[in-house]
Image (tube, rainbow, N blue to C red; front, side):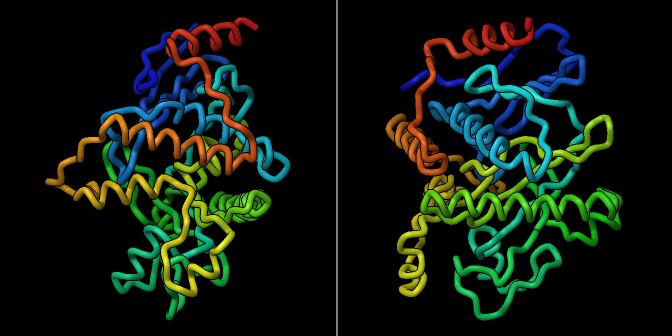
Length: 316
C-alpha cells in the first residue's frame, strides 16, 4: 500500500484557524488567504471511510485546478496558486450554505427518488415516462443544504432557500446563472474527451468585496458523475447500466455490502486489494477527464512534502 494522507495538523505562519471537512482540510491565514489540503480520505453517503485512497487527494486537486483554469473566463473563482500537488491556495470567502447541484440526466439520487414514485425534486418537476439515465429535456438545478461532517446534505427548493433567507433572491439568481454556464462548459469539455457530464455540484462564496466566486472543487469524480459517450444510446435502448466515470462504483460496492449510511448499518471492511483498485480507478478517471497522463507525486513523506512546498510559496 502506498502512503496516504488522511489527516493534517499543520501550523503555517500567520495561521488563524483550521476546518476539517469530509475530504479537505481548510487553513485560514492572515492577508485573506485560504489554504486547502486535499486529503486521500474517501467519503460516500456522507460517511468518511476509515482508510485513505492512494493519490486521491492529488487527483482531485489537480482536476479541480485544471477545471478552474478552463472556466475562469466564464465565472470568477477563488484560486490563486497550487504550490503542491495536494494543495490549493486562494482568496478567503464567506461560503453560501447551499450546494448548487445540476443534473443533465436522471441518475443517482434523482433516479432513486423517481423510482420511489416522486416526480418533484427540490421543487423541480421531473417528466413522466423517464427511464434511469435518460437525458432531461433541460438540465435541472436541485440544490442541497450543506451538512456538517457526519450529517447528510438535504434537498431544498429554490423557494425555500430564498424564503428562509439562506441566500438572497438577487444572489441566488446569480448562483443559478453561474451554475448553468459552468455545466454547459463542463459538458463541452467532457464531450471532447468522449464523456458525458451527467450531473455535478458547485459551491460558491462571497469575497470581502462582495463578489460571488466559485470555490472548492469542480468537475472532479467526487463532485460529478460522468458516462462514457460511446455506446450510451445503445445501453439506454437495451436498458443496460451505463458505463460510469465517478465514485458511484464505490457507492455500489457499499450498497452490495449492506451499507447506505443509514443508522445501525455497519461499514464494510475495505481490503488493501480493494483500496488499490479504487486508487487505480481514480487514476483512470483523472486521465479520462483531463486527457493527460497522471504523474504520481512523491508519497514517501506527504506531510513533509506539503509543508516544505507551502512554506516555500509563503516566503515568496
